[in-house]
Length: 254
Image (tube, rainbow, N blue to C red; front, side, top):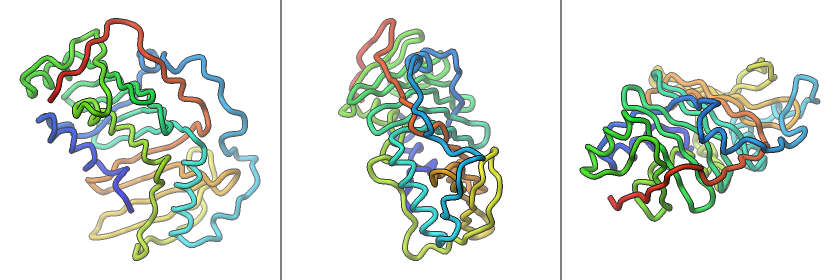
């Protein structure tokens, strides 16, 4: 199993920027980043519904269920991912080339992010801007302005890593020796799904894959400190990332 859903990936941001960025927060529907995705036309029939026909995935092994769920999400081309851990949350709309949403770190502020191809924009609130600028020893963020860069800029690349777009190009798989077990079919947020659980040293993580319609991976529940709770939804809906309106400054080299 790879680490695209581990908070350790986000810790790399903290190390690079010398700021403790613990985790993530929900996207405000009225934010500039959210508005950049407005006007998108949802694809029809992208998500499974209670009336959808059984897909038979619950007959497979735990490893096959997990791997199929991840591959099905990647094949959707886009989805919305919400993550939460210890009061920190994120809400991002993702595809292989786009990312729109907001990240908030408990007691450290928040930032909106837009990625379209190789262009990355981030707009920090005053708390996040102050902390980052102090840690970097230079002005990287100004309240009310977007900071722009590309993946060649270390700061912008680390911020964009919260989008973990590798989910589309290299879907996660369980290791051959994984001790994951298959659970029962249950209902998760109105969707019938089969559980796949992995328990070690008193901690556990449970993944849920839809058993009707397309076999999407839809939820992760975890008691582990290094893994967030997350939900995936709105499969196949266009992200609609656009360059933001308003003042834009270029990201400094760090």
